[in-house]
Length: 298
Image 1 (cartoon, rainbow, N blue to C red):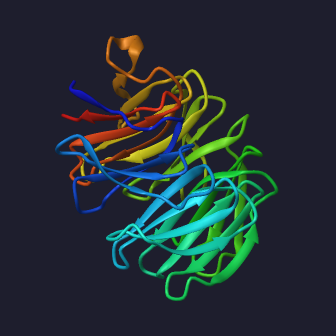
Image 2: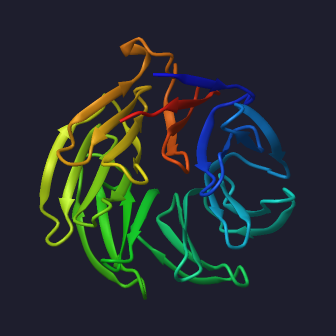
């Protein structure tokens, strides 16, 4: 498998997001800046400055041409994707760990390390709603328009389910024996996948929240789950320095991308991963300060 290493960061890298339409990716971490990468020519293009704190989360909103960053100091930064200009800063008081754009509602959902969820209007950048999903860090969440669910993954081992329209509480269950760090609805919305500090990957029926699969997927904490845009595969990354590709049908292992398997993988914790817009590459970032682009062939 071909892998290209993109160097330029001087500190650990915590977040990566790919452009939904172009062969571009954006990475950020402890450098107090966001780097734009050309995935075709394997080089950096621009740097988004005016960042005052470590960045843990990134999101792109194409209709408004926005690049949004969530910072350790609790600030939410809105950049113009075309000019790199900083347009807006919203202080949320607590470190931000996940950001996700809801295109139908034209809202931004943001989670923080004190268990708070913020709903922000992309029309005027105002805070529409705020609620607590426990009292501990919400490292990840996901939503399903089909099921009308918003689910949060908490450091208190629980997954909580909310109504996506009005954000009222529906249900909660203990998903793992340690903090839940990753959560993702399957493309068919039949299952919810969760990953945890206990290194286990679990899948849950979304009709009754019964556990379908439970197995040790990594050696240490799982930080991200991401489904392929079109093919029946998903990827996970972990503090154990590895990236793993799984078959969606039965959650069987397809490939292990790590130094242990003789590949030029990351030397330290893999903090975030994503697919390129065309699904032909996996982009990963790590504590080793490197960005890697892995060619994917099913």
